[in-house]
Amino acid sequence: MKVRSRWQILAVMACAVLLAAPAIAGDDGQGGGERSGVCVIDGAWVGFHDNPYLYGLLRWTAVHDPDSHWKGTMQLHFIGMDPSLGGLFPTVTSLSPTTGSLVRTGRRTFHYTMISYGVDATGVPVYIFKNNGTVEASPQCDALEVESIDFELYSAEQDPFGSDPPAYGCIPDGTIGFARPIPVDPPFCEP
Image (cartoon, rainbow, N blue to C red; front, side, top):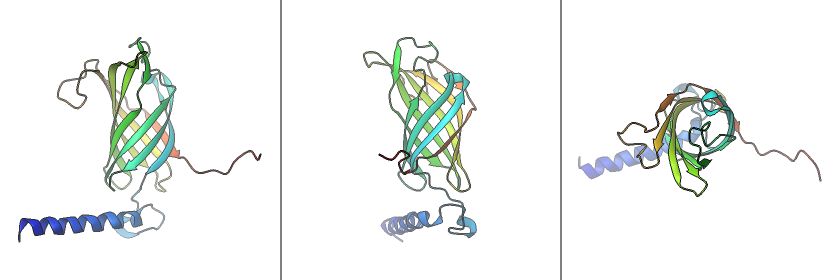
């Protein structure tokens, strides 16, 4: 069999799997058999972490955007996070938008990595904040439990995915956060 034919067969098989993936989402009887319980967590979520390392209750919003059934990207916005990290970086006044990647590890589980830049008042990056963790969706796929595994603090000049250790250290975490989808709600107040 020619190499080109093998690639064509693999491409057709991959497309078939991708087309079948939405039909097997959720634990509520959709799909059945060995494939039941595959959660799709695309879309907008609101969540929180009570994190002593980041100085109290962190609230956040996230948007998960799939590249495929197995991986995707996410955009986060932290609300109430001290960008100076408790005065460790006194010149830092804000965080850049947080961006990350998500990879499926099971029917309802994922690993993630995300980064933000801590920037000073003039917009110059001071540090890179990198966070790694796990996500587990509820059996109904309508809630997430998010475990933050660690925080890595790199200098702004470092490659956060290179072989050098984080210039400002690594903090083991282990805190648990929770999130739920942002629904489209009817207005609470009538005009």
